[in-house]
Length: 297
Length: 315
Image 1: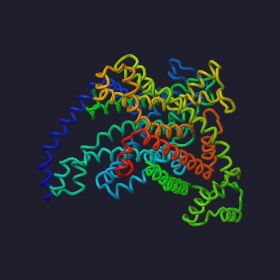
Image 2 (image 1 turned 120 degrees about the vertical axis):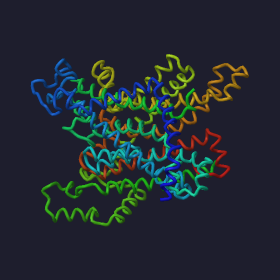
Image 3 (image 1 turned 90 degrees about the vertical axis):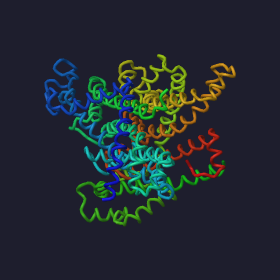
Image 4 (image 1 turned 60 degrees about the horizontal axis):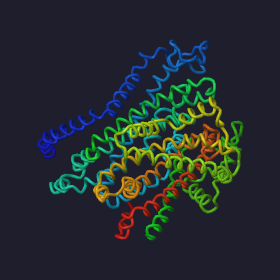
């Protein structure tokens, strides 16, 4: 009960402040040309993937032996693959895999990072030391190799890949959040909250996280881009999401044998990956500048 | 300073052991029966059981872990491949020089191009140079490494015929893989270099240096660059790790029989002792590189040295 009363009193002021800060950030974000382009391109890609069944002229498994290896034309915008499947349609459907993997994996990693990072940053001392040493060990393995090992165990498939990539990204994100919590931790308002007899959980939730989360938000965007790249690499080497699913990396892998005669099989899925990752990177750069006005000159 | 070096060296031991235990534990849960993989599907239950006992597969987890650690760190033996029954250590040693050459060459290319690109962009901030450099850098961090490799093969090997598309014997075989592998790292370095340089250029001591009447050249190269390089050194470690990961895929694109190729063969053949050995081997290699980076960092950054004489923990 007591907690509820407390919350209703505090809520309006924090909300107000938060929304104005949010508005300021958004304003800065939307004056950044790169970020706006990134956001628009990303939203277009999301739209195309979500409505793939309506937009795609063919199904992603529709085979047409007559048009095997067809070059890009009016009928087949990006041409056809070795089984006469329309590459444009497959890329639209493939976006669903890449986007799901990117968004869910980086989101899960961020949630885990919030727990690990705030435990380490807030409690400090032995907890911090123990957690950081564990992360040291995990980070001693290059991310790609860790993801290969985990997805070798879990097997191929969408959710298996998401888990493998999420685990691969936790350590970087935890470290970033911990670093930013360490600076916030020293602020006077945290001391005030401690004096106020707020519980640790409440201090973390209400005071620490809102003030230290912005580097993590930037990292989620960048992490999403990174995850999409690694997921494509995994599919390319035969792990992760595999054919006949139209994953972009798997499509590039299928195009390998025909790279000499039918380069369009290699060209278009790669462009799709590049545009998605590029838009996320542009957005991430913009977010970083918008959230940290000191950096901007 | 020497205390730092010693402490950092000793810290390597738990990290390397931790990595081995972690990878062993992850791959301990691999589904399937190695005995079945070795003997094929027509083996009798008795044969399978005998094989399992021979390999010690029925032993408890800790016994197997202990045996593996002893094999790897005391006998320097990663075991034998389930499929070919060849010594994994020998295979790793035979393949390592190719992976090493590819990684180091890519790293050098990345630094030689990335750092000047970033410096130039920062010095001419807002100019066309800056825009072009940053567009290149942005493309570099956004293109999948193996796709860059494929594009290079299409243009320089298949279309123009200047360089061989696959192989590993000659110097010319390594040109395309190096460029492909360096592109991403180069972009990361350039971006880091630019933002580091911008931060330094706007600091007071640069204004002081200019006020003293130093030439712009001197201001940039004597005063700004050394300070801006410090964060780049840290990024170099991370970049190297990423390159090590992408080498795995690059080796597969160019059919270079390095450790990455070995690992992918292992994954495809479900030969998990090979996968395990490759990941652990590359992780140890990466730890050594990170150690060198940290030592270099402490050597060039006087703040670390000072921090350490005041006796404070790592990082």
